[in-house]
Amino acid sequence: MLRSVKVSDYMNSEPVTFHPETALFEAIEYFQRFRVSGAPVVDHSGQLVGLLSEADCLRAILEDTYYEVEHGGKVGDVMTTDVQSVRLDTDIIEVAKIFIHQGRRRLPVVADGLLVGLISRNDILRAIYDFSDTRKA
Image (cartoon, rainbow, N blue to C red; front, side, top):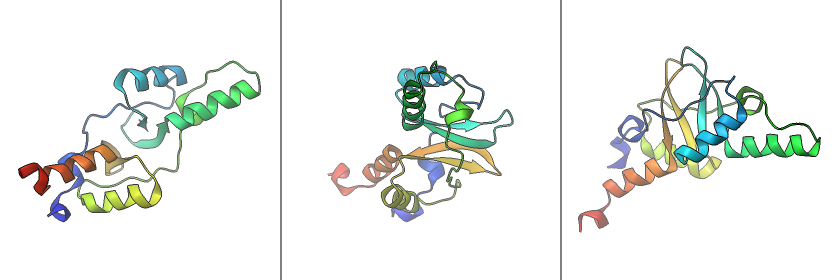
């Protein structure tokens, strides 16, 4: 049953996003405010150019502390640029396998190179719950 469920059915179509020139501490503020642990980075045309995670932020701040330089910088300086993404028509089971076997927490969803959403572990769990027999009992 879940094989017929697509990413487009459960993704967040309006995720928090950043631009490469966004200040790092502004991104951290958004993580706190919106209670997210990572977000896609897009250029001004909406093309996916990276992913920023809490780990990226921590790594940058710890490195700045180690070298005794002022904390700061831009999202584009610390984001992960080698980003795996999925399409709207990818089935939920395939995404779950990626999460399990590659340790990912979220994946950007793209169409023609443009970001159209974000799918997370929690979204997959929501799909599983929606289709579970336990819920119907």
